[in-house]
Image 1 (cartoon, helix red, strand yellow):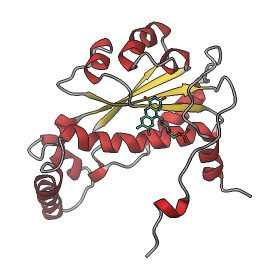
Image 2 (cartoon, helix red, strand yellow):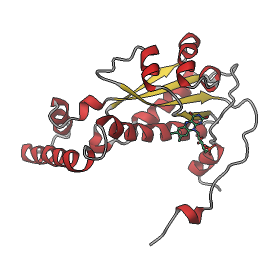
Image 3 (cartoon, helix red, strand yellow):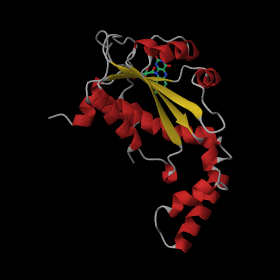
Length: 208
Ligand SMILES: Cc1cc2nc3c(=O)[nH]c(=O)nc-3n(C[C@H](O)[C@H](O)[C@H](O)COP(=O)(O)O)c2cc1C
């Protein structure tokens, strides 16, 4: 029997054409969001938010900001994954609270915070912005959303083809707190998906 996750991954395609008449039931949307909620984040920071859009009016205003891609209006739901880059600065009180919530002895908590600060200053910030770092975590949520949806026979399309500032403007995002990381459309395919295109596995996997 095929592993159920591999089965879901085989079902998943970047769906270009959704059936606009088919809506995802609320329980399944909730389940998909649970998968996002259970997704890991570096240091457990959860510096993200999942904005779930089912309103046709909102989808209509969002579509031109997303390269006018029809998935935005045809899909049943569109999830805009927002990163929260302001949270992750080592000086932010949130970092202290994040480590304290582990309930570890005070000296261990202090050591964790120091380790975090050092990691951010030496590895993360020299290479990328806080927005980019938080967005990496958002893509883990994205992947779990797509796989969980696929396991329920629900199609998806990950969408990076958007103009960030435009998206934030039409959705009235408080950009002091949140920034759009990535978008995913969810619904049901209108026709069969084209054949999968992948390089051979030997080209992308190396064993040592
Ligand atoms: C981060 C990300 C962004 C993407 N953005 C778009 C997009 O804006 N529009 C689109 O039609 N497909 C988009 N795709 C889909 C890819 O083109 C697709 O996943 C790839 O060609 C492989 O095809 P498959 O997902 O059907 O296996 C995106 C995929 C990823 C992972």
